[in-house]
Length: 345
Image (tube, rainbow, N blue to C red; front, side, top):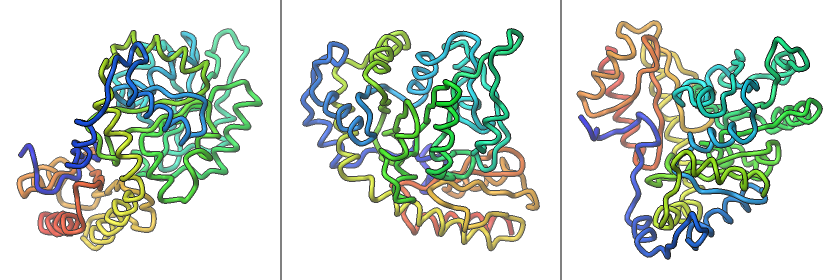
């Protein structure tokens, strides 16, 4: 089933609505590589202002944002510190090794977040047989940590640690705006704890494509050649940038609805025998569902859900992930929970 009635596989499955499409069709465009696309320039300035950074760059994807950041910041053989569940480790096809030629030291954090003490213990430098620690990478929110929100005070302490050890700090901000809406902490306050940060437009904001990375003017100047090398030229990208502007103007606050629907889904699922999930840990729009004690495996439940018009992704034999977004309403969440219960019974 290519288009299930209830799509909870990911918030990347969102589709642009009528108003967003109209904004895209009305966009003024030019050659973005020559910095002649006014709509793309407007989006970049808007995101730079939102994040409190000097400049920003619009690229096709969040993965490209991460790869550009690591390529700019790291020399071959440098080491990046990240949680073991991080997107840059698990879902970017080994990009850091291929593009930045850097290695990653995975830390065994809690719900996708490592502690300041763990980061400090992982640092190494000045020993010719070991790589030099170069970057602290965080993911806000932590995807495979169930959409958990890195506390601002922890990020601030990591920033101090980085400054004391001459490290770069980078934030994979794929769902940063979910954290902003859920916590009440501004995007600029979170972004102030890192050197570089990006936001995704194609997840909870509902755009068809794109992400925007921000940092200093010097960083963005160095990011441009990497965008070119990686094939990120989009030419008349204002059509896509207009979707981002529309989303930032109209769709950020409504992320709270997705969070409420995620908690509702967690509450319903927690009542099913063999299913373990604590609704109190659901901070944003991602659920990691433990079915270790269920009679069926993750892939089996996923397959049966899909047959009944509900899609969730299996994270392995003992788990599934569900992600709420603007294309799934409360009724859809209730249906998903009822279908899940029916299968497990």
